[in-house]
Structure formats: structure tokens, C-alpha cells
Image (cartoon, rainbow, N blue to C red; front, side):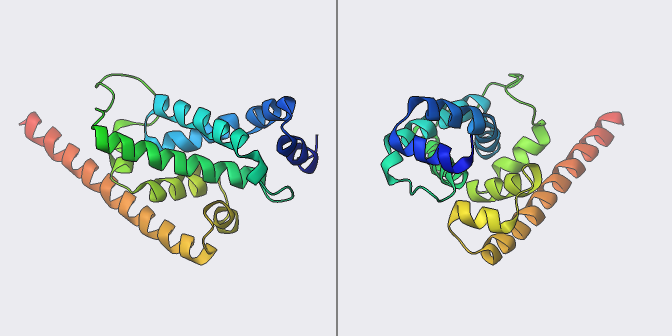
Length: 177
């Protein structure tokens, strides 16, 4: 089914179109949310909430515009809301040793120190290999602005990973003595 027809069927409330949209965007959105939230189970909740919001607000979607970008925007805002709730309710992070995903511990700690938008930009550029023009559609901001924010996030992430690596090396050297 072509994208235009899927958009029209989705807007009309077709349950089959919803199933097709979930099949098409479910896994990519899960990876996207996972990289923003740094928790697999929260990411699953965020994706479910995103699809519920999308279906409930399907009349607001403008047929002919980019359904994928609209879903990513909904997912981003859902993730930010979950992070705010987590902060308000002080939900503890997953217990140590709990395998919830494929992100290494050093990378997880570094990513958690980035702002949600920075994590989303890094994920969109590095993992999904999206252009800044595509990200501009998702975030509703100019591509040049996102490019600059991405560069700052990338530099910050590199410094965080370097600091973590150096700290681990010093710890290893002091334990070896």
C-alpha cells in the first residue's frame, strides 16, 4: 500500500490502517524511544501511548503531510512527558544487572547526561541516519538549528565517554597496584 493511501485510511479511522501503521513504524519508534529514555520497558510504554495518541488525534493529522514525522513528534513528546513524570515521582532506574537492552553501561550513563532532545538528535542522525532536513520536519525547527544542536550533543557525548574511559582506566591501574 502506498503512503498516501495509508495516510487517508488512517485518517478515516480504519483499524486495518492502524495495524499497518503499527507494523510499519512500531519497531523504529521503539528504538527511537529507547534511546531517548534509556529504558526498554518505558520505551514500550511510550510507543503504545504514541499510537493511542495518534489514533485518538487522527483527525488532526493533515493527509498529505508526513505520517512518520508526525508519529516521531508524538513519540518525542511522549518520551519527554515520561521523563518529567520519572523526575517528579523519582522512579528509580532499573536494578543493576537487569538486562533491559543492548546499550552498554558506559554509553547509557553518558546518554543519560544529555538532554532528551540531544539524545533524540544523536539517535536520529547516528542510528537512523536521518538528514537534518528530515529531522527538521520531525521537530518543527530549522535544519541549521538542529545541525548545531547535534554538533554540541556529539561533542558533549564524546567528552562524557572519554571521561568515563579515563576514570575506568585510573581505577584499573590503582587496583592493579
